[in-house]
Image (tube, rainbow over all chains, first blue to last red; front, side, top):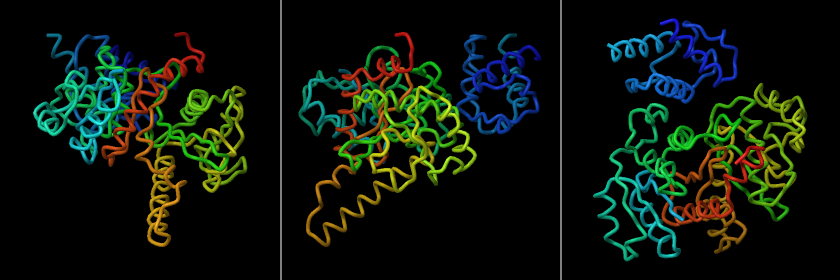
Length: 81
Length: 318
């Protein structure tokens, strides 16, 4: 999962023009001023890379990066089997 | 021209949206693609006489409601009328899109389907308001982005500059920051930071802060603010103009001509800037006249090559 997280945070950091180190699994989206549009953009970039479509969850339910990444990674594992 | 109309978005959708679209078809040679629930559109169209070939129905089974999160809707409602209508541009079936529905959804559609221009984070909406100099001043952003960063306001200034050259033939428009005082140190943390950015960027003719009372003064050509502030200001102006018109009608028996300049139905809509396509945002409360004028604005933006000229103004290669 670490590799997946590294990729996701690199994408998000580039989108937000912030240092990648500012994004950890514990970082809340509020901390880095990322809104739902930023999150969708990151998810769509990951979908392009992995050539899959993640489930269409309510993004407002995610408060921090870790919870979102765990769910996305779990889905990725599920479809990879 | 081929214009995609999101007929499901807006307080008076689909009846008034379709009425405005049919009126445009009767007035021009353009083709309109009406996007929404097929049966409803067919029923509504039965009330009109028009050249059949000039209206095509594009089915879309879903609608983004005003209270929905645009980002979630973007993922959950792929067959919503605004997303289907915007995809028609991407697929080269339409040249522009017009919608009276959720502004957030329209912005998300523009961002994710059409894409942004280089170095632009979020598309703002631009509106032109009349001024004492007999010209217009541009207001950017009037509602697309309620929470903004200073860098985004700098981008809005650049897009406003580009649009001023398109709409008013101004090469070096005066740019001001909407604030609660003229002095440099005034404002909240966002405007204080933005002030410094605008001042440092020599490509912009930044003339400082502008207060609410000077919006019509003509002291500036482009007024920059976040979408939260801009939307409240614009709607306050419209409300004040309506109040003035009603008061004049009651007390003088007529409405002075100048007040018509503030009638949003005559403007129709406002374009989203900074995206790779023409997307016209109309009032949620638009009726047929406003829809007609919104389509007219879309055609004008295409005729003036708005996207190409924005790219050139931003120093991008075509």
